[in-house]
Amino acid sequence: KAFVIATLFTLATICSCQTTNYCDPSLCSARVTHIACNGLTKLSSTCGTGAVEAVLDSTKQAQILAEHNKLRNKVALGQQNYTATQFYKQAARMATLQWDNDLASIAAANARRCVYGHDRCRNTVTMKFVGQNIALQQYYGMTKTDSQLITEFVQAWFSEYQYANPSYIASYPNGYSGPAIGHFTQVVSDRSSKVGCSLVSYVSGGWTKKLFVCNYGLTNMIGQPVYAAGPTASKCTTGRNPIFSGLCSVNEVVANSPY
Image 1 (cartoon, rainbow, N blue to C red):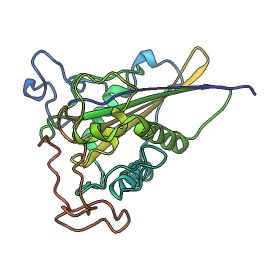
Image 2: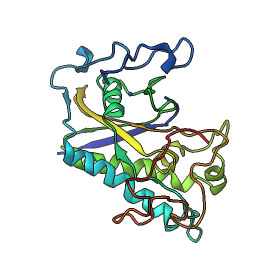
Image 3: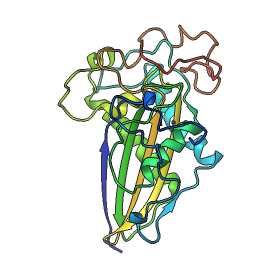
């Protein structure tokens, strides 16, 4: 069969599940409504028949974490090039990304709309500047597994490294207008130790569409470093991750907040 694939991506910025009152105005900026305030607990009727919310069980969660952490590890070890011969600096205290159910529930409130777009507020009680990466892949006349899609989405976000000059890593730019870099910088933010995601499938005009939303403990902060450069893991207070040796251990306490 003939097939077509089109993939779209947008960027991460600022800003949580049902034990919290997400309509609490203190969670968001003035006059901004939290995505989970009276948010969707099931797929919107606008998603159409045949729409499915993927079950991101422990296996899928582990895959999402591994896809992120292996890339974070590569950067932290100083093994990721940004030109043919130049490499990013090592990271002194890159956290191991871990799953957060609150962030995942809030990501689901976005994805269940079956509308590709960032929400304006997704904070939790403990994380006040939650970031977000979103991706949409659409194709016709073919099938893909959720595992395939997860890998492709995270790799595509990371591929923006080629546009992320090290000066942007040292200080996230204000008013940046070049090729997208914000997905990459979100993936390798050293002060973000939590992530939660949602994946929804729906059909529109004969095209299968897969919408992936991930929320992160801390967004890209203008004027602040994406990660602190220094000898790999030299500032980790709890030692290194035994699997991803460039990252701090999972016991590292990371604030998920600005400097």
